[in-house]
Amino acid sequence: MAIVWRLEDDCLAPEARLRIDYTGPNPFKAYQIARELLMKVLEVGATRLWERDFRWDITSDPRSFFCRIYVDKGIDARSRAFIEVTIQGLQPSDPTKDGKVTIYIGGRLITLWTLESAFQRLPIYRGIIWVYHKLFYNDVRRGYLKKCVGWIEDVWRVFRDTLSIPTA
Image 1 (cartoon, rainbow, N blue to C red):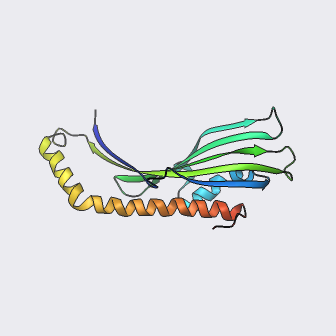
Image 2: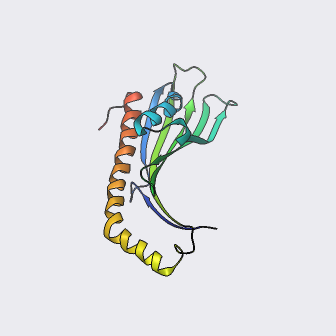
Image 3: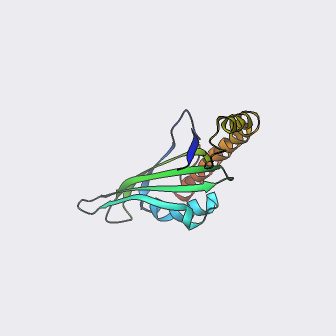
């Protein structure tokens, strides 16, 4: 069994996520475009994007919907950005009528140091990793955090443009 040293940072700290509120015709369009939008903006393939949760309630009008989408964007051999998009809203049965949708976009930077061999589990090796991380890799991770923030802001901006919401 491998031991894993896991470092995880919220990209938008101290905020948890960005928020978009939209009221207008066909709010379900936000969900319909989300998959292609995320693949295009984050430059990932379909295998790096998945829906964890999708709910659609047809028992009332307007119909409520909820979706949570994750994107796993690899950066290097050890680090990756994990972007989460939550879309929830109300879609009238007539798509020309006004509905509401709220989109939350957030992310985390995750770095994994896997210690598989007996040598890698030695305290001296862990010390070497710690020194390497403090002297070199920590600055690289800070750059990755800035990239992660940029990716999240790009997704936020493209969602707003697609829904015709002016950016302030």
